[in-house]
Image: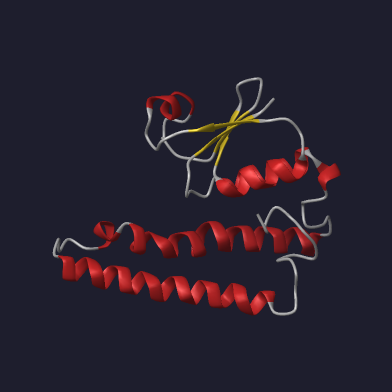
Amino acid sequence: MPTLYYAVGACSLAPHIVLEWIGAPYEAVKVQYGSPELLAVNPAGAVPTLREDDGWLLTQAGAILDYLSHKHPEANLSGGDSLRQKAENHRWSAFLTSDMHAAFWPVFMPYRYTTDESEEARAKVVAAGHVLVHKQFATLDKHLEGREWILDGKSVIDA
């Protein structure tokens, strides 16, 4: 049975949702970033981390989602098998795990984006982050106009 190491409020939510949609048995282990328990399976101390029964580890939400969709084709969550459907899957996976995800970093970790430790400087970084977040949501909103799912049907990308 696979084990998903996750943290609350993290991008590990998407693989957790997909595992529920698939319906196959799995174990979910709640961890803290950098905890000894997480570092024992992922030296980077990051979530999500998926461990298979044989000890094989997979990290990065996009890779885990792609893996799960191919491991469980019966769940029909890959987004399609044509070349263009696969490309759209990769496009939106990259958008969500890079553009969208990174847009939130200045909001939650403004200290990474300025050497000025004043509250004013950090507030400006957070405000700039909000602009980025709104831009990315506008891209997603435009794509979703008249659609129920990001791809042609329910897929790992929607998680």
